[in-house]
Each structure stands twice: as structure tokens, then as C-alpha cells.
Length: 348
Ligand SMILES: [Zn+2]
Ligand SMILES: [Zn+2]
Image 1: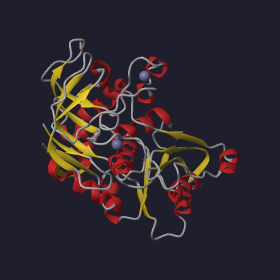
Image 2 (image 1 turned 120 degrees about the vertical axis):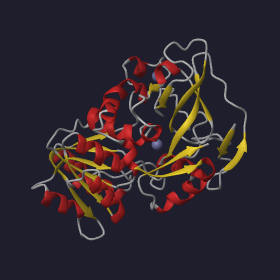
Image 3 (image 1 turned 180 degrees about the horizontal axis):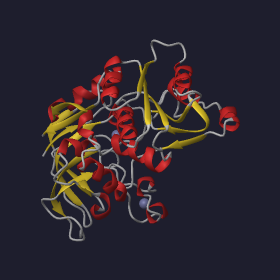
Image 4 (image 1 turned 90 degrees about the horizontal axis):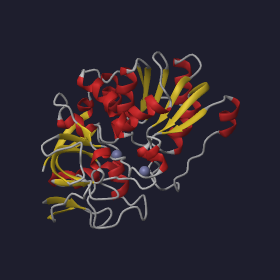
């Protein structure tokens, strides 16, 4: 099969022929129809996580496609079915999987990270019965690819972690793919979303996706103060979708008392995975801090119903599609944070 192979960090991907994957006994092989290029792919490509990948490697963890082959133990899926492959799968063995939380599995199944991913024509997925999700006919492959990582991480964060309520104010710092996902989902849930970024094109898209207000952080001295003014005291929920000190601090400073902060943006490695949090405010204002990583496969139906009903559309975030040959060039541009929305590979 054809694959875009990561042979060295910060270098162009090598487009080459590699052996077709085979399904394990409980696994499946998926013919990839669409695969999003995520900020996490860029983090991995730029060597922000030393030791995380074994090279050569094939990135790509936002994929959907058609089941091409299944192992003898697979019961729930058959050749020809349309499926999404959530990146945060589980082994089905550890206590977290037993508690229905496979997205934080001790030995996770993560195509694109722990095994070869969707920058290729085919992908093998272990434990297919628990780690694949049926993609309804009414939902396009582009929308399906949009749901494999950023969109579902945002949905899980808002619905299962901070439990965003209708009418609440939520402020989102950083309107890249995951930040815009938060805006669209928050709006669908009836919350009032404020988008903060320094890119006017990103803020314009946030407005189209339902943001109640937008703030260009380059135009104000203190974005958090602007948020507190807009919300008459502070937002109930803040999201740092970027993962740098400035956005994390501003997000927490935007909260009202008893506010909930959701951290989705990962650090860029330069801070050793650490960011400071104003801990006296956490105490004094009784704030809560949450993380969100992926989403359990069994929670997909609730999100897919909203997509099939037209209430949510991850495909609105897809601003560009590219052939596999261009995946590496897209990664190489992501260091400038200029990309808008999702770029999805749809030709293999
Ligand atoms: Zn597990
Ligand atoms: Zn991702």
C-alpha cells in the first residue's frame, strides 16, 4: 500500500510502498477514506514528545473508512461497513476499560501513535469490536474524519468533564481545530461562547460556527478583563485550546467564582509539559480544573445523533482537503499556526 512515512523528525514525509497491514485475531483492517491532519500529528512530527514514537512511523489518528478485513474473533463488524476509528481506544483488559473509560486505558490502542495510522491507504485496528464506531450513512466521510480526535475531545470535554449547561458563558482561548470544535459544540448545547484568538480569519469562522462574541487578543491589553466585562463577572467555563502559559493564565483569569477550567491544548514541549496555574485563585474562587483526552467509543452515538440530525456538523470545520502526497507539506506549515480549521486527506 501507499503510505506517507515519518523517517526523521522535522523532515518531509517519505511517500513509499509499504506492506499491507493484516488484521489481528480480534482486529480489523480499514481502507482509509478520509483522515484529518491534527495538531498532535504536528507535535509528534516536530519531536515535541521525545521517545513517544518509534521510527519509521506512519502518523494519522483522525480517520474513517470502510472495513476491508476482520480477524476471526471479531463479532460486531463485517467487511464493507463504514466506520470511524477513534484515536483513544482501549485494550478491554485494564480496570479503566472495565469502568467504561477506555480512552484512559493503561495500554491504549492508538493507531497513528502506538501503531501505524491513517497517512496511508490501510490501517490495522486492534480489538475492533470495542474500538470501532459505525459511521451512519447520513454522515459523510469528511465529517467522520473530523470526529476522530479534536471534535470528540471537545465533545467529551464539554459534555462529560465540565458538563457545560445551556445559557452558561464559555470562553475559548485559541481557535485552531479543537478550539473551533468547542465553539460549534458549545453553541449546539445552548451555551454562550466567546472566542479569543489573534487571527481575524479564525475569529470570523468562530462567529459562523455560533460564537456569541469574539475578542481579538492583539487588540486588547487584557483579554481576561474583556471577558469579565462581557459576562458581568466572568465565564462559568474557560478552555485553553492552545497550551501555552499566556492562554492558560488568561483562561483561568476569565472565570467567575466556582468556574470550571478545561485544558485541551497540549504544551509544545518547551515548558516540559508544565504550565503554571494561579493556585490561590483556585482556592479563593473554588475553581475546578479538568482535562479531556479523546472520548470512549461507546459515547459516540449521542454525538452522532446530533450530527445525523444536522444539529452538529464537523464537516463545517473542514476548510481544505488534500491528497496523501501533500500531508507532509501541511504538517510543515503548522508551526506558524496559520492553518484554518481542519485539513483532511481525502485522496489516497
Ligand atoms: Zn484498558
Ligand atoms: Zn489529534
